[in-house]
Length: 252
Image (tube, rainbow, N blue to C red):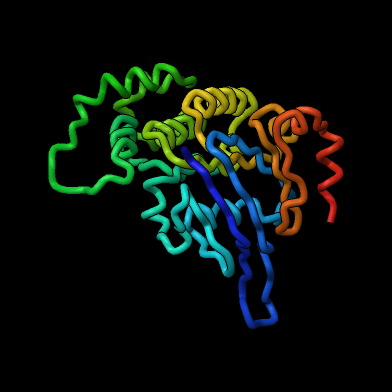
């Protein structure tokens, strides 16, 4: 079971100055196990801020963040990485460029474990990595011994996604993870995302700017506007949504 709760979570920057600004207003949100949320909003609406508060790279000004009944509000980003995986918009983030594909995958399998001096065990994992990458687009299974810096953007982003999910996280965060890719590669990675999230019954939040993708994928859609949740629909209500319905919320 993977359940996320945000209780009155808010973020205000530059407190006590003329530059003070409330980025995310007091937000209450509950994600149930296996919820696949597509998150929409204009630039500056607070989408990435919301994910950064959840992953621990930002600390809320107010409120609590609860994951599986554990208050993780004060946990560092490093400690939250044991439970939370994220794929970023930039294909260069989330991977080690001067390590091979296989070496990156090996690191991902050890997420959240204590590190020590011992044999890394790469060779005994190669068959597993070959099998897992053979399920993916972009021919990544032929590049296991290639340094990541020599991969295409699509291959690198596909690798980032596999690294984020190869060891099942309690929560998967996707921050426009296909935005920097060409349409074909973007479609392939979205289809892969949908398949893996469903197959592994992951709890997932995916930021997107594409209305059609927000409608197509996931069981739930949330729209942020000026730091507030202005729409939260799921199930049949989500299925009835149209692009015109969504556009009504993209106003100040």
